[in-house]
Amino acid sequence: MEAWDGATVRFRFPDAGKRLSAVRLLSSIRHADLEFDGDGWVTTIEAPAVRRIEYRFELTRPDGSRETVNDPGNAVHAAGGFGESSVVHSPDYAEPDWLHRSGSSGAWRTLHLPVRGLHTTLDLRIWSPDGPDTPHGRVLIAHDGPDYERFGGLTRYSAAMIRAGRVPPYHLVLLPPGDRDEWYSASPAYSLALAGEIIPQIRAELHSPAVVGAGASLGALAMLHAQRRHPAGFAGLFLQSGSYFQPRHDIQESSFPRWGRIVRFTGQVLRAGRGPRIPAALTCGAAEENLANNRDMVDALRDQGYSADLTENPDAHTWTGWRDALDPPLTALLCRVWPD
Image (cartoon, rainbow, N blue to C red; front, side, top):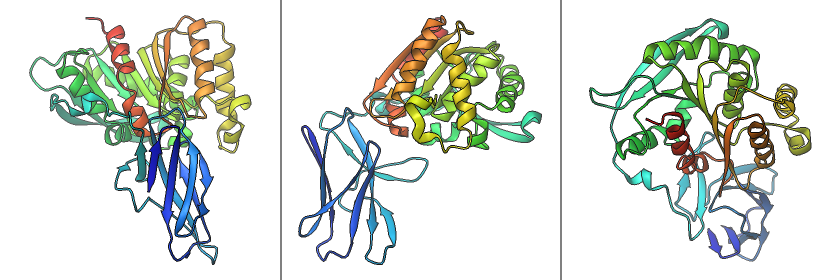
């Protein structure tokens, strides 16, 4: 069981009979080995600049076998793309208020979209506010769409913000990731398919002159890559924890198969004297390895004329952290792109 006490966070795993030979903390902010204290394993870490920590324990048995488990003494869990984790909150953590507001139920439909450039057919899920007055012309599209919906609450956010009148009504399009590591890693083939096939068909379906593109991690990188290479059709960008790898910040990522391609693209953007500027909102967790490269990216975009802001939210590289950073950054961006 964990305990957040001011400047420190204490983690404990029970083991009265010392059946384990080692226990390691695997958390969203850092990893640490626990020490045995007589009836369990404990470690205390300095509280980071976050308000919540997702974690699991890696257990090592005397025979060398290992197992990763959640905290048996903590019933609070957070969902994510790799399963559930235990989570501990700082005393001042609060969920976004929009999570507890009622919103428009909206209507869903599926668009089956053949994409020749990717040799596949994508099933795009489209959410629209309910009622006969749903306007045309405003579209937010999201990479990793199913996960943004399931873990990031993007549809719930949209419904609550529209119902409250804080953003104008818009359609939300959830793009499935497909071959994510390939498509979202600054792939010329994917950016051409997104900008040349997927977005034009979405714009035709929803009568939209341009779209706002959203993504997290590699999904943010891929959205920026598409906008840089094929800017027509993009009205704004919402980029969370973008994986803008640079050797000086991110050498720990160098084993990623498309490391070189990402580094080349990032370097091109950072060195560019100008770019196809549009409004952009970036967010990144205060405890993330990606923070330094996101700071560099927002500085470069501003220098090139983008109306760009970076929000450093008190979390790490997690879906809940991205959910908690939707408002106000995305809210402000949508009002800037769609002022009426």
